[in-house]
Image 1: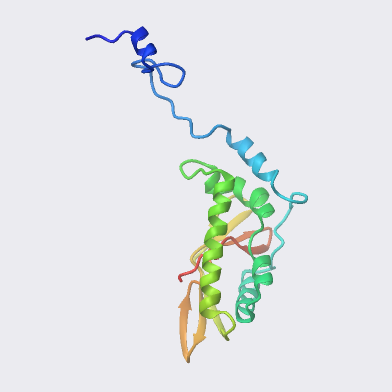
Image 2 (image 1 turned 90 degrees about the vertical axis):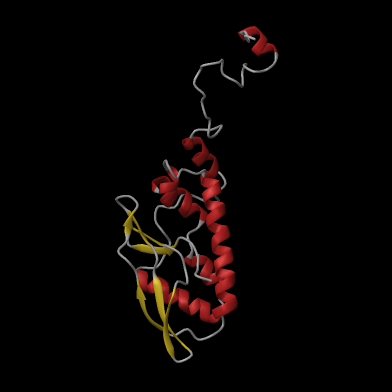
Length: 192
């Protein structure tokens, strides 16, 4: 039995949501182009767009502040050391791998995933090490990864600390973003 175009149209086999037989299928990944998605995400940010990271002057200073805040269970300081939504929207996301294929994501989704990872990691870190001495011996970080001409990521850093008389290496946070000589944590993804 041969199906005619008219029969296919009547039974919904083709139409506005289905291409005619033999026509190439098109995939629409989003209702909005990436520039519109970014503009909509930025509209949810309070205050003026940041022009620089409000972070530590060095990677080591950032990590020292972090370790001290963990020892004191100082969640306010830990929150300030983490990239803000505004910094993410204006300084990190547009140049990140999440803004381009093959890893492209909507900025809101990328932000949600990063904050969820950070909340989970920080909660586990504070439950395990918070409020206890965490003597910092050193830091081991591979060479940074360039994001663009102004931004670099320090990934897979390990903190060397003394614990119960032994020296141990731990991954207590996720990537560190460096931009314009300022440093902040991108996430608090830990090994816990």
